[in-house]
Amino acid sequence: MSGLRALLLWLALTWPICVFPAPPELLLANLYRDGLDPAHYLVSEKLDGVRAYWDGHQLLSRAGHPIAAPAWFVAGLPGQPLDGELWIGRGQFERLSGIVRKAEPLDADWRDVRYMIFELPGADGSFAERAQRIAALVRAANVPWLREIPQFAAVDRNKLQKMLADVLAGGGEGLMLHRADAPYETGRSDTLLKLKPWLDAEGVVVAHLPGKGKYAGMLGAVRLRLPDGREFNLGTGFSDDQRRDPPPLGATVTYRYRELTSRGLPRFASFLRVRDE
Image (cartoon, rainbow, N blue to C red; front, side, top):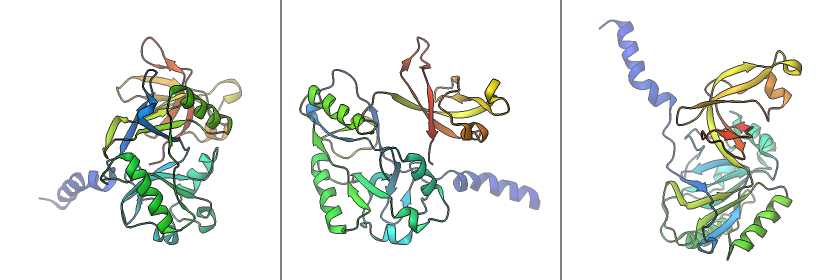
């Protein structure tokens, strides 16, 4: 075998391993639906942060990419797996994303970041029991950047809607409901539900469409491919800076929408953010 062919074969065998890390198996939320009884769930605020999995040694994104956090930040974390959100505060996602994406972490920026824990991957017991253990772990770690996400009983639908209204009035984006009696599991499940006034979903950028009028010379819209293969144009929600430097081809972006059309495509869709890998 020639040297070139041997190199090409080696790249073919190793490239997927090098480029596509295995994402951690995590619990993913379904949407809350009218008619579900919230009495079986514990409720917390849905934080507008960056999902982060701690495997006991390093922080990983939802896609399995290492997150470059300062040594002092990870040194304060327990030696067992954790699942949570890196978070600064309500309405601070863009700033947080810029901090987390840096290959070389800046201590001054990370002093504002909190690791907000909502699950103990692989742990025994019900979620209500795991929530108590999370609070105990946080107290034992005794570092200001490690926090638990408070969990509350919803009791009934009226109280749930009051909780949602209070979070929205304070600038939050919604609620998460986690079945109190659930053992730990992974994958998408009704064990975990999100409740928001807007729905959100993701698509992959497959084309940039040019702008017109005041957006001439900039992005007009991105063409998004949905997980089922269908495509649609997303043209609202972009800042002027984002129109000048749009999400790259192949990027996964999150958009929000009110409802679906009769063809199952999002209605009133608006760009939200590029998904952090």
